[in-house]
Structure formats: C-alpha cells, structure tokens
Length: 405
Image 1 (cartoon, rainbow, N blue to C red):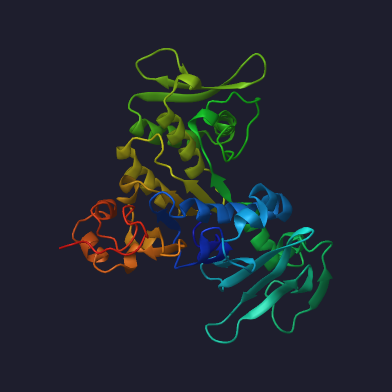
Image 2 (image 1 turned 120 degrees about the vertical axis):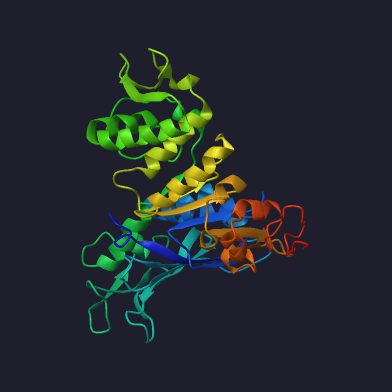
C-alpha cells in the first residue's frame, strides 16, 4: 500500500468539544505531531478521533456515555451542538471530501442533528453534497462518482442516534460513503502501557495490536507464523535500540496461554516479559504497529516518550515518518527529544487562550523558525529555549511570548 492510494486527512475543525471550543487545523501532514504543556489539549484532540471511531464501531450512545454525555463533553459555558468536520482525500489524486457531523442531546439521549458529505470534483465550482441528513432522515446519491444527474435515494434511519455514514456505508451502492466508513472503523489509536504488554493471553495469532497492547504475544505469534521477514525487521530495529538483544518469541504454555520471552545474546535462557524493562516492551509494541504488514489507515500514538530513554525518541520519530508513507500518523507529546526529529510543517503547538480554550499554531508559521532549522537548529531545543510564539507552560494564560534577543 503506497501513500498515493491511502486516505489522508488534511483538515480538522472541532467545536464545543471540551476545551476545543473552536479549533481549526489546516494542512495536516502524513505525520502530524501535537506538542504542548500539560493541560494544553493534546489528549482532547486525540480523544476526538477516538470518539468518532467509537461512534462508528460501538455506536454514538456508548461513545457518548463513556465520556459523561453533554455535561462533561460540551465546552463549559457554551450552547449548541458538538461539531466535527474532516476534510480528506481517498488518495492523492482524489477530490477533497468534507465530512460534517453535528451531535445534540435531547431527553432521550444523543442524536445526530446534521451529517453530510460533499466534494468539489474540479478546482472551481460549488461543492456538491452527496449525503445530507438531519435527525435521522435525508438523502444520499448513489454511484461511484456521485453527481447531480445520479439517482437520489431518500432514506429514513431507524433512530436519529444512528450515523448515516456508518449505516449506509455498509451498502455497496454507496462506494464513497463506504470508503469513509472503512477508513474510520480502521483507525488504530494507541493507549499502550508497559504493564499490559506483560499479559499472558490465550494462544492464537492476532494480526493487530490492541489499543492497550495486552495481546502483544499474539501479534508476535502471528508475525512469526505469517510474516517472519517482518518480525526479523522488527527484531533488527529493536536490537539497534536495545544492544545485544537476540530474539523475541511467544512460547505456548501447557495451559494454552502465550508467554512472551526476549533473549539477550550473552545468555542461553530467555527472559520472561514480566522481567523485561518497560522501555524495551514499549519499543517492541510500537515497532509492531509501525511495521504492521497491513497497517491501519490512521494511527494515533499518545505520548510515546513514557518509559523510553530520551535518546531513542528522535529515532522513533524517524520511524514514525517512514511509516507515514503507508499510513497517517498523529502523535501527542511533550518531549523535546521526540520533537527534535520533526519538520516545522509536521509540528503543531497547543496552548490555551485567555478564555481557557485550546488553540493551535504550526511551527512552520511562526516567524523565524524555518530560518533557525535551515541553520542547523532543532525544534525541541527551540521550544525549550522559548523561541516558539506559544506553548510556554510558565505563561498562565497560555498566551504569546516572544524570546528576548
């Protein structure tokens, strides 16, 4: 799968979602990283993608209830629906498609107030809406390339809490709707912890790492059986990060469970996962995601720096960029070491404005930053030395501060 033929999100706007009162991010790149101090809104952006994915996989009501409903979800002191707008391309040569979702809450719970899909097939002309729903009813235009002359189908969903794209996307006659449904349901959002990777699960190969990483032995078993070359590639990379590491294996126990083991070169017997360092396990888990033979079309990783040695982080960032040739990666971090390996176009700094709402500014758009990078500076160092316009955790308002020359 090449970057020319996978979906790419290029734009995100979120309104009334916790601290994201009205956040707009343009020019999202294949690798996009959100940097900021604690409380700046990094996890909230991450959760927007998790929420949308859950709406498509487990349903709006469950995703809603998990987050405390409007009482906890809607930006404090505001009215109106929660709105999520994505602009994406199915492949690099495809038209830009806009997905708009607005969610309200009534006496019976959450419901989809508005949902639409539109595109502009040429460079000029008015955007054409080929899916348009309000409160569970609307119309969708069938066909491979929906256009004005194509058939319009009037649909009434069983409940206004159902998403039209998720429901109608199951039908082959709506290929553009189906493509978005496949895209969103295929997202992988990581909440890895080292402790979870030490689990001893039931044996059986599994193709993809779970969000918490508790099936890491199953994924190693799958790679060992189906993609031994890819497992060797992961091991080779891991050996560069953890000197003298020789082998990673998933051994079946007598009770039918899998035991993850790692062997160091100087020793004849492998080490059980429960005795392996947090950093080694987390690096192994991240590599199984980044080297996935059939990667998800969007990967989200939250704060990969936890438990990893700072010197490993620039290399992990480079591996994320390499993986972004075949997927789209979004990462949250507050590590200058991870940021050091990034380009100004890839890095967004989050901060709170004077009203407490999250704002974002791309480092490529900050005066002087590109010049510094062209002269050998690193973004992480510039951040720590306060050369960014925003993102200084010592500024209570989260506002702008210019570095003194």
